[in-house]
Image (cartoon, rainbow, N blue to C red; front, side, top):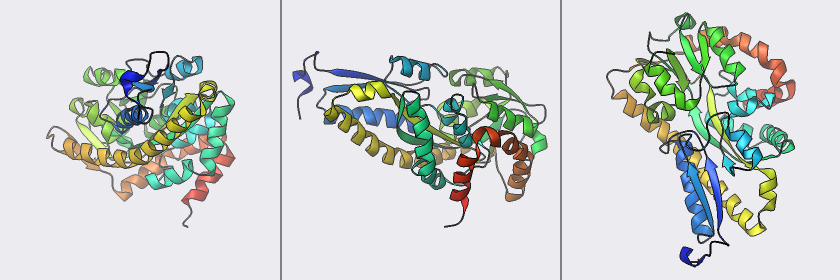
Amino acid sequence: MADNEQVSPGEKIVLRFSHVVADDTPKGWAARRFAALVHERTGGRVEVQVFPNSTLYKDGEEIDALRAGTVHFIAPTTSKISQMFPEWQLFDLPYAFESVEQVHRAVDGALGERLYRQLEAQGMKALAFWDNGFKQMTNNIRPLVWPGDFRGLKFRVQINSPLLEAQFRALGGETRPLLFNEVYAALAARIVDGQENTMSNTYSQQFYRVQRYMTVSNHGYMGYVVLTNAGFWKSLAPDIRRVLEEAMAEVTRLEREKALAMNRRDFEEMKKDDRLVIHVQTEEERAAWRQALEPVYREFATRVGPEPLALLEELRRPS
């Protein structure tokens, strides 16, 4: 392995990886691990600079920056991609997936191949699919046990996500689209009453400190697609590309394990806060939520399309 100090500035390749969450999250950890592996395996010839917490680009800016070539790697949620590619809204359908294993079978199989081809047609290349985890509901007003408990409450939703807005409307709530880095302040100032997120995001961003109630509902899944610019990718020397691919594959395997562990760890930490009242959804309550959310499926079935929904249904069948 070459010594980094022996690499001249002209030979060094500096790549930028932008994301919007904290370092101590599944995505934050994976981005830093990827950068470390690439540095190690290229002897410092390639440096991946990681910019967490929206320090480089905010929600809604990352994809444009990637297409413009001003950043080399991003890892947006599937919700962010769905504004350009409606079939990706499938991941936001409430209760679409029953386990992360089912998600992995989807993205690593025919459904993933179909969705990734759409990205390539628009000049983006998918390098990996990273887990965040299942989402839970939090709010400041009352426990969210039955659909009627949402009535009159205002929830933050991701920007440009009509399906998630429809989800809260179906439950009786109101919505306000906000950038991820605006959520804490909006919760603290009572601009919104609540939000949905994974355990790791709710903990790392301290949302739970300005929320009174949490419902462990696992009603939706949040994952990230690691993207690069297809033209940039093709311009890389084959040996550099191979190192990046191998490092990404290794990190992805580890990230999926890390996401599960982090969400469990962060849930246990939040349980220690006596100010947070936690309710775990029962099967009866889950059935009521699903029934209330059925109109969302009907409304968005034509937008997602029959082929992706058929592939999803295939995954649900007992093997």
